[in-house]
Amino acid sequence: MQFIDRGKISVRAGDGGNGKSSFRREKFVPKGGPDGGDGGKGGDVVLEVDANVNTLLNFRFNRRFTADNGTAGDVKKQFGRGADDCVIKVPQGTLVKDATTGEVLADLTELGQRAIVARGGRGGRGNAKFKSASRRAPTFAEYGEPGESRELLLELKLLADVGLVGYPSVGKSSLIAAVSSARPEIADYHFTTLVPVLGVVSLGYEKSFVMADIPGLIEGAADGVGLGHDFLRHIERTKLILHIVDAAAVDGRDPVADFQKINAELKRYSEKLSKRPQILVANKIDLPQANDNLPALERLAAQENIPFFAISAAAHENLDALINFVGKRLDELGKEVEPVVDAVKVFDVAKDDDSVIIERNDAAEFIVRNKNLEKIVAMTNFDNTEGLRRFQFIWRMKNLDALLKARGIKEGTTVHIGGLEFEWHE
Image (cartoon, rainbow, N blue to C red; front, side):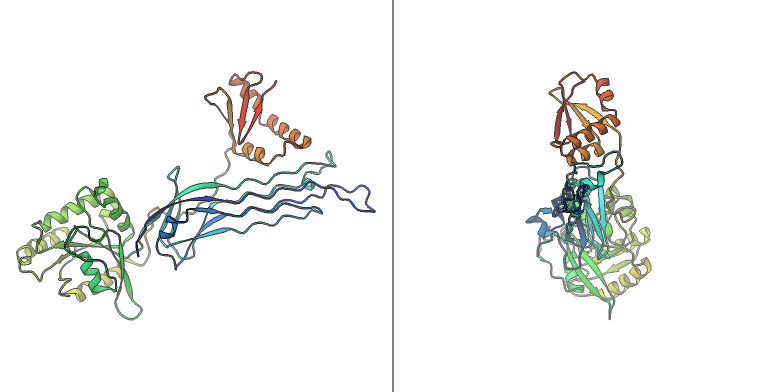
């Protein structure tokens, strides 16, 4: 199964149902008042963490998600039905960002956790809601509010307890194959592992931890060289790092220098990541060349004040001692997943900014930007005289004439608000 760790999707919440304009008409009620009901709310688009989903592969083929619209209001003050939410299942450890702004909308780390990423529009009010002492028989009703839409970037950061780091071909895949049921491709060439591989390591009855074999790191990874950014992104969540080096120096490399270069890349990418607890693991001690490098690696571990283990993944030598130590170290570190942001954040609608912004386009026309005003435009029936008058009242309350005059508007100039355009007259 291919491991897909990124996806881009478009989401659109449902529109609210239109309000109803009607009057009570019954045989023995000659002066029945307005009785139009409100429209129903549009469905939200919701992301939900599901234990049965473990990759973002599905989002390669299904990239558009749309919630249903609310139904319209009806006579006798009957409210329209609210639409069901569109629920999108995502794997645990999914980071959700707005594709336009890059803002983190949600960091979904717990099973069952939900985040509303696009809110459905509210239903339009029926004419019964506009009845007042001065307006006894309103004939207008509102259209439903449009639902929100946005493009999202999804990133899956592995929720592994232990991450294996090291240059290509140092034996990371061999180690995870030896201590778990994972079966990564293993061959004698660089970058055999192109996608992360997860393995569950058992420590006995009801006790285990997850180990991640991640694509090999090379110098320059913090700048995105090779598979660098993919690699570094995946180890951000791990609680413990096993730093694997080739003690036999099969490729003629210096394992001490390799250790220092990789740690330098970790520090360049993230200061916090560079301080994550490490264990230095010297692999391939079954080869005679390893004896030449083991003393230097032991001194290196002592200088760095980190544990040191000499193993052979191929010959299964010293693996039990390493795995038991890792289990105890994880118990000491605790079981809490450290999120990539300061706290688990779930998207919430910001309070509407009521400030009015006036801009000019290339045709010298005016563009009025105000969230509340744009909603009112979308929900107003301009074919209804009373609805038009209500909008004109709101226009005056916003003091738009004075603001437009201050920007130098002339008679007959076009003004854009939301999806509509108006011709301005004194």
